[in-house]
Amino acid sequence: MELFTAAEDLKFLNAHQIISEAVRIPARSSPLEFFLITLTIILPLSLIQLLFEVHTTILYETSYDYFSGHNSSSSYKQFIRTYSIQELFYLLSLYLFFLLSISAVVFTVASLYASKPVSFIPTLFAIPRIFKHLGLTFFYALLLMTVTYLAYSIPISVLVSENTNEALLVGFVVIFAIIYILVRNCVTALWHLASVISVLEPDVYGLAAMKKSKQLLRGRTKIALELANLYFAATWIPELVFLIATQFPVHFVVKLLLVLLCLFMLVALNLTGLLVQTVFFFACKSHHNEVVDKKVLYDHLGGYDLRDKSVALNPSTGSVEMQSLVKDHDRVGYQPVAVNARTGTVGDQNAENGEP
Image (cartoon, rainbow, N blue to C red; front, side):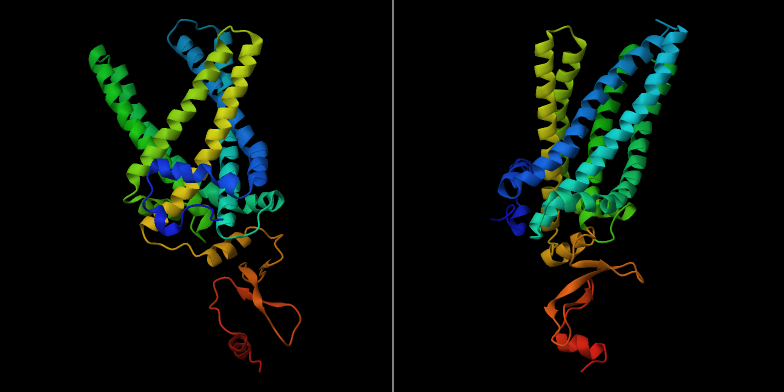
């Protein structure tokens, strides 16, 4: 059974059809593999995401009271300092598990697409090698996000400090907020696609992945923004309900059920989001008539997993080599052939080696 719609047909799918294709992947292919990934990586990610939302709200409210002069006691100052440090750890943990989730899900989907056998343990062994590429790509995305946030927050801060007319200030804030949300969603779509590229494209990560992502988004930006908006809107609902359930006095059983419901919803949304961005990568490649060669992809994915018996690392060059599928009649076993080498007959290879 095909993993999803044929590659040449993906170019015609809209945002909702891409989501429909993505949610069917676990059931069509390897439900146990996706269940284990969800349980070990995406569940902690979702839990940290909910706790981070509550933590940020408390820190914001406390900081507002302190800096507005409503409560300027030293205990408030110490509380803000402690919570700010904790906020940093929450943020780092959030991005760490998000990158781990991308590594696991994208690697698994791509392996299924390339007809490469998948199991949970090899996926875990592949994650550290994938993570290095994703980390560098995330660094450039973070710089872009920081610039975007500063471009939004600095003008607002200047307007507030200048005691601008309240009605005019509200108007500027609304306009800047709309522009910021649109730009933020564009950056998010760019980063998510660049993350998939970092996993699936040989030697394309970091700034190169961001440039490649920008190229692939041409003609697909509207769909990318629609997918980003749907994800942010969908995740906002369980986060809001979780915030209300934890801060308002309700019965413990009701609170527990709401918390579990929010966590379950966010886990499902995060898994779906990761599947969607992987399918969207193939859709963008199809839109630009770029063929994803399954053989090349199989070899590339094999390079992440050094436990794979068909893959070896050449210590002299640091390049990944794959055992040839053609058996040498004069020797026992298979001969190593570089992944990017030109394939030919056994006789051609022997002639190049000076052998009869």
